[in-house]
Amino acid sequence: MIIIFHKILLFLALGMILSSVSETMFYQVDITFEYYMFFIIYGLYGYLMILLNYYYKISSFAWLFISASIFWFLIEWAFVGILYESLPFSLVWTSLAWHTLITVLLFWYYFRKTMLWVSLKNKILYNSFLWVLL
Image (cartoon, rainbow, N blue to C red; front, side):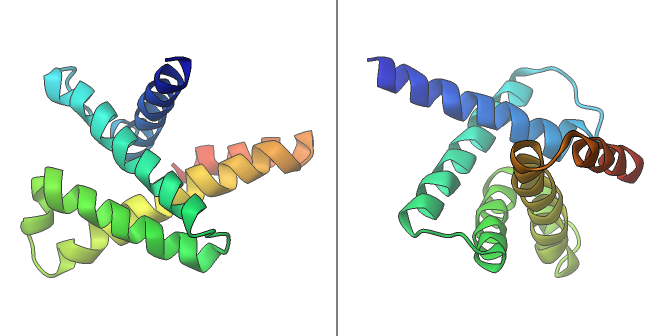
């Protein structure tokens, strides 16, 4: 029972982090039922991505980019209507340039590595760089 609760809490927290980095940091979002559904959807897809990356032992930057691109393309295809607005440009922009680069590689991969393995000075520099960039 505790393991199930832990996994539910993990994918909800992951959904909050990924959806806030992907959507609410850049768009003004109304707090509605759909807003909370983004937490669940992003968390579910993020959790599945973690499980598959662990199962296939993805550790290199290139394979992480490919797996993140596939997952974010699935999110844009299934749940967001912007994918179909200006074809073919929108097929690559939102999933590859937006979610893969910003959400997964910049925030999930490098932020985690920076917070775990570098000195306090480099942590401050990295966070300052993100603040200026965004």
